[in-house]
Length: 395
Ligand SMILES: Cc1ncc(COP(=O)(O)O)c(C=O)c1O
Image (cartoon, rainbow, N blue to C red):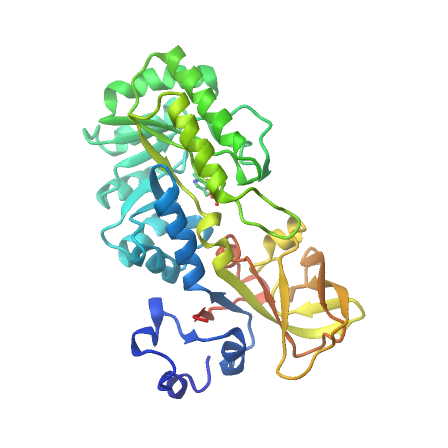
């Protein structure tokens, strides 16, 4: 779908090693990618250097092992970027995610941290070398034991429900997790059948206050004292935020510092400590490039919408950063716009407001930034609108 791709790749400005970095067509700028595109769909742009920078921050400063939550962006190029940067562990939730990581990074360590899995998924995972399994109730623990034939090498992770009231913009407390009393019972049941036993939790996605992790560690401390059960690992999940417009989380170092202190204060230093960031590793490393098909006053009709990568822009009214791309001049004045996606559904509307040059018009391309996590990953093919165009921007 990219015209003159082969001749462009022959240009000496692009190093041969970077011809198709991570398996993607590569361009030095968004403008170059748009100019080369010959299709009718949106384009997903990945910025490998940004993903690398976010990964380095975690690998250097997070006080434990870092897993990537594949659901945030399962594009093989993202997995390859992370692997090339030294990340070795992946949090997966399904057979397809297991197979995807096994195919893309064959030697990766896989953690199946979904608290509810089909029996087929458990069997498939074990056969694929997965030894880490999450559970949050006795029935799920039983399924894991039966389907792995009481394997002697399981590392079981009890998913806890945390007390309500965190700062996460997207709470994840409505569905999974054992409460305090259930957890006491489950720790005692799981200890004798687990080669290794851990607890895990998730403070909710886009957590705005590092203190939430410390509160969670304090809760785990109380639980373990009451249970009097030895554990081997402690997994603080994901939740690490991205600085979207209108949301200004503290610097990531504050999260690491508070977690490190919590580990010290509550005496968890001997445990294997684990984190499962998704959003924070790839959120700022991806954009959607979408074309304006029609303008009606302050409404822009785009070739991408809520059934594509803009689900959170529509359902949660998130205002992602936007930038206009046009070959010629554009107005210095700005206006506020709403976006409409290409499907027939009235829900396919992103209220914004998004600030763009006042003369934005049909044929212009808009880069919607910070969509590397839970953007392309959530896109559907509803109404025949889908894109398989993903590019790397190396500039
Ligand atoms: C078990 C688990 N781990 C990690 C994550 C990643 O969370 P985030 O993208 O907020 O870092 C999720 C997100 O839903 C999750 O369910």
